Amino acid sequence: MRNGLKEWVDGHVTITVRGKRFERLLNMAIREGIRIWNIRRAGEELTRCDILIRDYFRLRPLLRETGCRSHVEDRGGLPFWLVRLRRRAGLAIGASLFFLGLYMLSSFVWTVQVSGTRHMDPQKVLQAAEQIGIKEGAWKVKLKEPLVMQKELMSLLPEATWVGVEIQGTRVRLQVVEKDAPVKPLPTSPRHLVAKKRAVISTILPEVGKSQVKVNQLVEKGQVLISGIIGNETRQQVVSARGKVRGEVWYVSESSLPLTQTMQRLTGESQERQYLLIGPYAVQVWPLNKQPFARSENTESRFLPSYAGYTLPIGWKTVHTSETEPVQRQLSEQEAAELAKRFAREDILRMAGKDAVISDEKVLHVTTENGKVYLSIHFSVIEDIAVEQPIVGVPQPPAGTGKP
Amino acid sequence: MKRWSRLLRQLAGGVLELPQDVVLEVPRITMIGHLQMYIENHRGVLHFSEKELRLLLTNGQMIVSGEQLVIRAILPEEVLLEGRIGGVKFLETGPQGS
Image 1 (cartoon, rainbow over the protein chains, first blue to last red):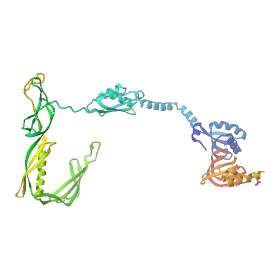
Image 2 (image 1 turned 90 degrees about the horizontal axis):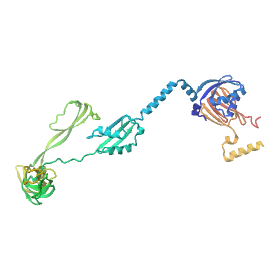
Image 3 (image 1 turned 180 degrees about the vertical axis):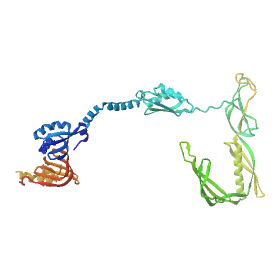
Image 4 (image 1 turned 30 degrees about the horizontal axis):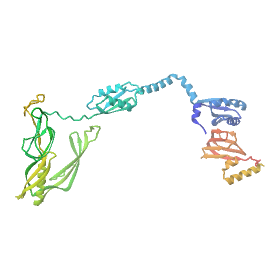
C-alpha cells in the first residue's frame, strides 16, 4: 500500500492543517489521487499528516476550497538531502574524491610476488613478467587475461614447466614450477668393469664397452668383464665401461644356535607416567613414585604444540612402562635348524649386497652339541659382481692408438 | 426493482459461494490484535479524531473507537488504521434502514 523508497526518493513533508473541514479535504484529496499518510490529530481543528512534495502543490487549491490552512513542519527525503549536501559541498566532493581515488588506486598493480623458484633467479621471472607488462605500477586494465599472460610467460621462461599468473586485487602472484632437469651422470674416467669375486656369469648386459666374457663362464676375481677399450687394432678408443654383470657366487655359511632361547614376555603390570616438558627438561608430574620393575619396556609419546614450523618449548610426555619377565623356551632340533637357516640366509644376503637373489641352498651337515645346533650350508647367490677399475697409463682419446 | 437486485445478489452469493464482501458491497475488515485495522470498501471519511474514526459505507456508517488513532495510509477504498482500537460499530442507513 505504501512505497517507502518512492516516498524517500521523491521527498516528503510533514504538514499541519488547520481547519474545520479537514475530513472533507481528506476525501477530496484521496479522490484526486493525492497520497497522504500518517494522519493524526494534534488538537481541535489541527491535524498533522505526511505528503509528497509533488502532491503538496496539488493540495493547495483544495485547501483554499475547504478553507483550511497548512504549515510545513518537517522535510524529509532525497531532495532535501541534496539541498543540505549542496550546502556542504566540500564534504561531498571530498567523499566522492576519496572513493574515486580508492577505485583508481585499486586498478593498479602494486606488488608482484614470485614463488616456487628453486634454482631460477626470481629477478629473471620478474624481468620476463615486465616484458609482458606485469610490473609495479602497471594499469590492470591494460593487462591481458591471466591465461594468455601465463602462456606468454611460459614461452619467455623455457626453464619453467608452468607459470601461474594470479591477480589478487593489487597483487600479482607468479607461481613458477621449475623443470626438473634430468640428473646428469657424473663424468667418469676411462675404466674397465672387473669381477669382484670368483663367480659364474649368469647375465651380462654391456651398455658401454666391449664384453669380454660369456654367460656360464667362470671368472676369477679381478678378471675384466666389460672392457673400456673399444675398436680394432688400428683404431682404438678408451671409454668408461658401463653395464650390468650378474654372476653366481658360492658361499659356505657356518651358523650355530642354542636350543634354549630366552625371551622377554609382558606380565601385564604397567604404569603410565606423565611428564611436563620444559625446554630440554622433563618434569615428572604424575604419579610421583616410580614403580620398581625389575625388567621393563618403555614406550613414550610426546605432544609438542607447533604451528607453521614453530614449536613451543613447553610440551607433554607420556611414558608407558610395561613390566617384562624372561621366559625360557626349549626348541626342538628341527625348529632350531630352521631358525639357524633363516639367520644364515639373511646374513648371506647382507653380505652379497642389494638385489642379490639366493638361487640354491644346500645343508651340508647338521650337528647338535652342548645344547647348540651347528649348521653348515652351501648357498649359491646370484649377485652383481662388476666393479670399476680405472684404466691408467693409456694415452687419452685424441691420440687414440695405445695398447692396454 | 432494488429489492430484486438485492435478492439476486444474495442468491448469487449463496449459490456460487462468492465472498460476501464482493457480492454485497460491505467492508472487509482485517484486524491485527487491537493494534492495527485494515478496512477495504469504504466510501470516505466522515470524521477523524484521536478517539474516533467514522467512515461512510455503501449503506450506513462504521464507527471505530479507540485511543491514539493514526491513519497510517489511506486510498480511495482502503484505510490502514493504527492505535489502540476499542470497538467497531455499524450504523445501518440503507434502503430498509431509514
